[in-house]
Length: 107
Image (tube, rainbow, N blue to C red; front, side, top):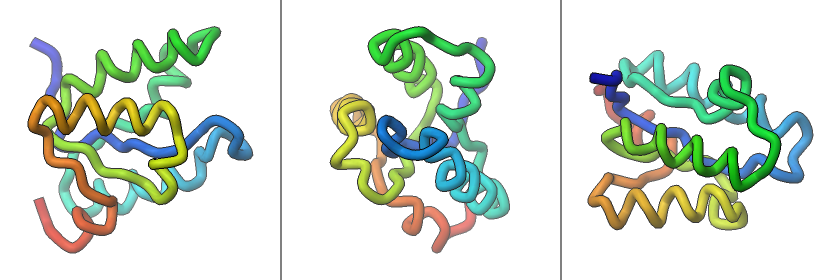
């Protein structure tokens, strides 16, 4: 059985410098300091790079299914990929909330 994570981090990447790595990594560090296990899609990009956006989102959705909830970064609504991840998560009854929501709580 594959590992299950507390949170999947969802946010914009396309069109951002360095694919928004700094924002993702800062959020992951803060969330992990609160005790959450976090799946960072940017780690997936390093571990399993893909050649097209479509292949990236397929990989990310596969991994999203291993998570209990979604933590969103600012401006996620303007991201085609993050919007799709949130849509899928909500339709699978996963809790979806901003990173700040989870940071106010300990796991």
